[in-house]
Length: 314
Length: 314
Image 1 (tube, each protein chain N blue to C red):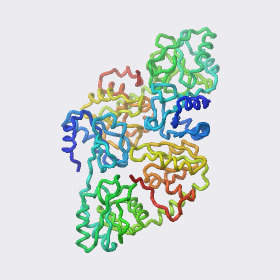
Image 2 (image 1 turned 90 degrees about the vertical axis):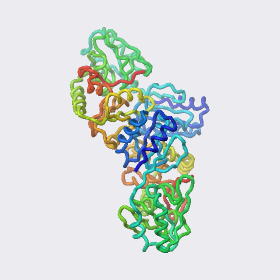
Image 3 (image 1 turned 45 degrees about the vertical axis):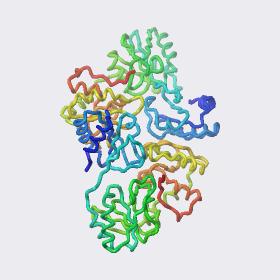
Image 4 (image 1 turned 180 degrees about the horizontal axis):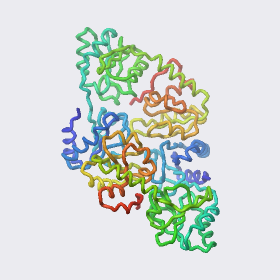
């Protein structure tokens, strides 16, 4: 499902003498095999990044410094850097069953969004919706978004607000919950792998996040976390948030973990890194970790009912 | 035990508008307090590095890019970069009891080595040895070593070979075992905190390392790990080691962990990063992780009895 010929031809065209390979966790196991294949066919030095990679925002810049070209697998373009070549990874699963299952739950005007793994199916989704008498709407996102209708865990700018329902084609809860909170429109999530569709409920996640905010109410010492990954570095936002608490310090972290949070004597953190971290890993953190939006709620700058997921926009 | 006045005066002299602070694990808890103090007295932006820091070879270069000056606490100078200011951390414990306890175990001509935490006691150690009728010998190390007689976990070049005994003043087993294997001279380790001295035994560690090499004998697929930390990047060595196995790939890793090693389908690794990692963390690794020296033994390029700890020299 990767185009190895494309990789070989980029290397030859650029007369590269070394290449880096970066894979998301689920694809890392294929790394050594692909590296050997490239070595065999081109004779150049290939180095695989062994560090975690959670998105196109997460370029291994140290490795990038060491090689002529970097192949970043499984994500779509996010940052413009000619040295990085994005090798997308498409799931070859059909969307027919998912759309069929979603139909009874949709209004007439339907915003369509999906992740990069299924973005090549967008035309087919639209066709299926039209055939069923719906009026599909695709919206372009901001510059972080490579394709119309594509969403990231940190960016829902392609989710249309002026529709009856939004249809999310993909897996997991995070994206559809974020879209629901952001667009304030009912969201139906349909999973092409299971062929199941459901109306997205945000009650539970809202209760969980309110509980984290409440737990942080008495915190005196705050750590404002700055992400060190290229597409997650929000220094200005971090400095602004620091100004909201008297006893706050800026802490830079590459990978947030319970251990690293425990290293410092602070009562609570605000995370300006990938918005998923504070929410997905909440159960593993020894102290409250709030998103910037949640910190604003705690500080009275935003109403409790205006809780949304944090987004990184352009 | 830090000189905060020195920090303030460096900031003022350089007219820095931002500073990074980097602490080893044991000192991280002091970070927020020191950051607040610097902020209060200078008004500049201070960012603490939240990532692990295991030595002077482990500069947070991403943070360094974001600030005018970086204060690196607890280690002595290793890399020359004007933007990094090393703030050493001295243990104020006396060495008298340790030297006293060591005396009966020492020969006449005694090489003296210690870590940066006790290096300011070197004159006192020499004085005590002379008073006891010994002939102390202090040797300059290579350019990675800031002070005569100082050792690092990856560099024993200051350990004299032409002596009857080497006296190591400090804590832990790693340094004295490495010195024993490298210098081939009896080593006495004396701990200033406990006041106890002992003759250093390397039998057990040798057995453990031989077992790891033996376990890796049948490995077909190898990962050669390249460290991404400034003072641990040994690309040339890694490429040379890669040439020793038919099915080997280069993998760059910032922090080695069991998880990251499991991400790839390889049978064994060779680590060219900090020499301590392969040895200290051996029990936690899911597959054999060899040092370069051990890989040479496995490949028949070095004799089994010539096992030494890996060193990073200049």
